[in-house]
Amino acid sequence: MNDQLSKLFEFVEENKERYIDELTEFLKIPSVSADSSYRKETRKAGEWLENKLKELNVDTRMYETPGHPIVFGSLEQNPNLRTLLIYGHYDVQPPDPLDEWKSPPFSPVIEDGFVYARGASDDKGQLFAYIKALEACVKNGVEIPINLKFLFEGEEEIGSPNLQRFLQENLDILKANAVSISDGHQFAPGIPAITYGLRGLAYFELEVTGPKSDLHSGGFGGLVMNPIHALTIILNRLKDENDKILIDEFYADVLEPDEEEKKLIAELPFDEAGLKELLGTDVLFGEKGYTPLERKTIRPTLDVNGIWGGYQGEGAKTVIPAKAGAKISMRLVPNQTRERINKLFLEYINKVTPPGVKVYVKTLHGANPVLIDRKLPAMKAAVKALEMGFGKKPVFIREGGSIPVVNMFAEICSIKPILLMGFGRPDDNIHGPNERFDLDDFIKGIKTAISLFFCL
Image (cartoon, one colour):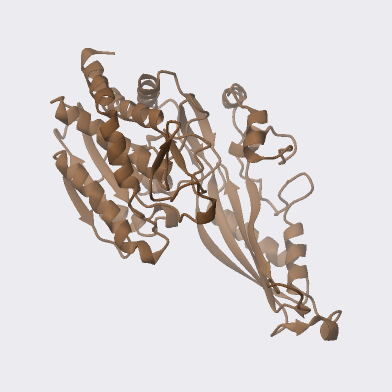
């Protein structure tokens, strides 16, 4: 490490208590994008970031959308320099269920080296690391050898409904050589990672309708097809006992990993016993013939995410419901596409629906899978930056979830090097009660961001 970086790292250590105080200030803002009652607070979080960037001499503007605003900042020193675009989101998931939190979700508490609050890891803590990295450079008079751009949105947790249009209308200001997104996690505590693959998503809602109104089960039982029974028949025909998906041609386009990638996955320090303990289960279940880590990352899946129908109140009500429904999601892998899976799913549902009912399929949000070339120069720079920031060489991983914004940057902005460097941990409880962020990882994230500025 050169003297310049050593100086910046020392500055980060000297100021880490202040950084933590500022992070807790950010976490106190209840920026729940999904709930309209938090609209003012969500905007306040965007304005808070706008002010932080302006304090560092970043040319910053807040762009209005039909929903929550987008904050864009640019620090272009020389048009001939490489440009890094940094993405993050300032909105957070709803905090429910509140009774399962050990402390109020928007009153940050520091305990055992973690800060507990909604948004701590997803994504306020990770996003803020980049701002503090820039601050370290500015306050020490260190010239960054690249141009920086910042894009912070307030709608990621609701599917980024207005981001696509923003990207399409502002391609000229978004030009960059690489995008950095820290909205994920390490492979395990102390094992930093670069995510080079994301599964896609196809999400549907089914509504099964039968009689024109609810019926008395004594008077009409045995005469009509019960929509709940029909729904269970449909769901049961989606997968077999080995968790294989039965939709016709579902696996036809699946890209199998090559031998090098298989070896890479097999060498990851996967802790099956630890995962079982974390999940509170004795058995890991999934597609036969694949390891748990392969099933989690490189294989497609299908899950029922919700189901309803009939009487849900206390006591008995002998009713045949007029309708029933379910929400179903599928995780997709390269080279599957959301469009083709949508078509195959609809055709299959029509095929397996029993007589006596009708099924309406509503297509919800989704994304195509992503696979990033591990050998790109920018990826090598990210490896070096994480090694400098965390003190350990990172592993390459595929992630089981989806980040739709990655597809947008690749498909709309044509930016191929997308650096997914998660500073959080797999057990940070994002989206759940008692979300947390390790404060040592927060500081390491700042150092990683500084290193990336100089390695790219």
